[in-house]
Image (cartoon, rainbow, N blue to C red; front, side, top):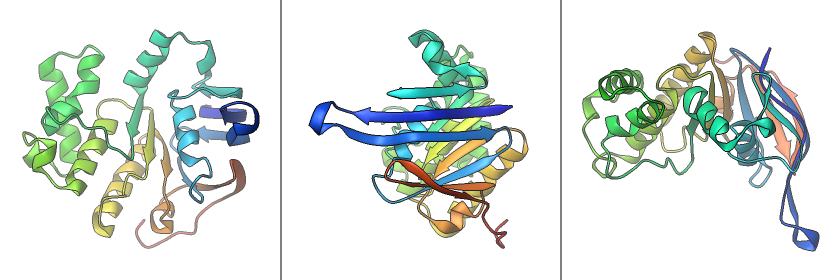
Length: 232
């Protein structure tokens, strides 16, 4: 069963002569346990694709389904519940809350979904441990480096049982060694049954994927299986 399916999806911003088409007629299905990398030049629709797959945006036409549920049929409350419980996001802007410590940032999705504070903290510490930052759990975002903030954001995306992880340039602030560690972690989540859709401009990291989808001018230009590399 496809965890995420985009069927003939088009997303247009604006109307009339000023309208801009971000995606046009995109068809994509991603299975459980699959890591798919999305590549393409700036403005090709990569981030729009991620936002649609996670229900953060709605298509102008076509359908987006997550685990056989058409997202367009859900109320705002139902959609928010799916995002909290099953979808993890890593944004380019990170969106960490400055007034919360690293562990509190990671705890937040679990607390919003009703976990008691002690349980949310336990899960958050496990996630921070996975990205190698348990020792910085009580630091605030301004007290840690850009790369460490990136890893906190990744821990927040992974905390709890995430069936779908959407990552927009998750290695952007990381050196190659740490980037490999993060891709290894995402790969392990896929091997455990999760689905990961990751936007990247680095062929090195795309090589960890099961498939690489290339976007150009809002359309799928190509999809290929990357060659095996020595980081796998």
